[in-house]
Length: 232
Image (cartoon, rainbow, N blue to C red; front, side, top):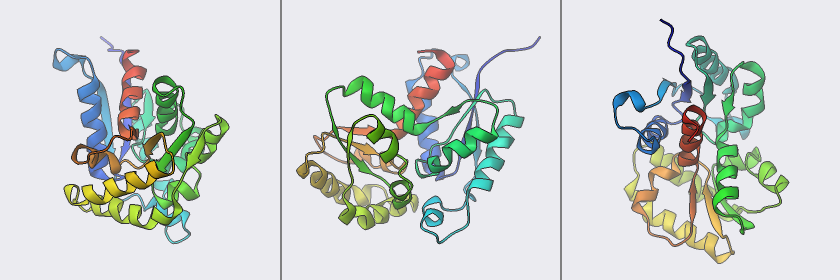
């Protein structure tokens, strides 16, 4: 007897803990009373994918062939859709879509939809992300197309990068106060909300205090994956 179900493939490992965070948020936000109510996921945890920001800065190997290798592997497993918990890697979103035959669930579009749904009156959006995400205009182009004013504090990018790579190295709580200071700077320039536009950043959110609304891009993607499978 053939079992028909929607299976979601995850191009993971960018970084591993961010991938785990997506998995956890999919589980916690799925309405389930038993094991069988949860979503069938196939995660390719592939940390050997070259650094996305380094490449976009002209310093490293192109990660696209590795990303496509993971995507093809997931397709061969019979997934119904593919997602990728790495914001910077969404610079290659169109390249990925052109090479796969199943839908690609975009973290950027997931964030945009959440903003439209839950923050209908806002216009000024702060972005905290990697240099690669900023260089590649991963959020800038779609947000400006929708008429939003995107705020990027260029003077803080190096400090943000240090925090992101420190989180990748396992230091999460240790960076909470530094991150709170960054949020205060975004509030000073009239950011109405801030996008946590790197999937390492949501790992630090439970340890910070702020009254500035933050869009957790990993959570936005998790909800979109659930919606794709369950229609919730």
